[in-house]
Length: 290
Image (cartoon, helix red, strand yellow):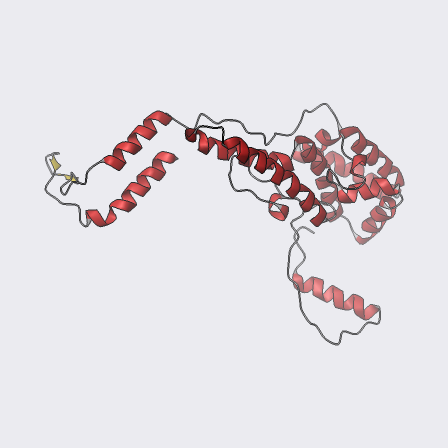
């Protein structure tokens, strides 16, 4: 739901349902408190921090399925990382930083190919639609959903390459066929509500949903590595400056201020300079590396 239902509200509903079913709770051994991150943004590009599972938005946006999707994705990611690390052995040392960027980008691309992103965008709409439904709407939705052929609804529940029946949803025209078939299985009121939501969602969110079911809007932005030379600067000059800083001698008296006439004053010694030198050099190196 949006906003999310509170834990206390969920607990109260649980007890009311148990009471309605004639079930008496005699002892509570443990209470679990967690949120399942369904939907939300994909991992940011241009970063070296690799996420997996819920942190990488791998939870199914409509169903909450996660474990099998995570296991399949972990295998693909691990294979790519292994290949990239092996390839680093043939790269010169000065390209190590760029190689790390390439490894991270390739690992994310193994999880989120453009086709995977299109399939996820289709499922995100499903999750958004479900969160807007009343009890009557939800009953109608699931009644129509399970009237679909088993391979079709099971493939939607899994929704990840390599999992059973995902071949029913792994291209734009198959998702379009699924969507049209689903609309015919829904009660008329729910079907009309979904059509209106498709229009409103597409106007509000732009291309993600139409892109997932048509060939006309291209592909989502890829995670494939692209060398970003704009932020690198003059690498040779940075390396030279860093080596000069490391090799420089410590001066007991250094310019630290201007006097009233605008002349540099060289009479004020820098306090405890030897003790802070390592931090100064470390900060300088970090600045140059950036």
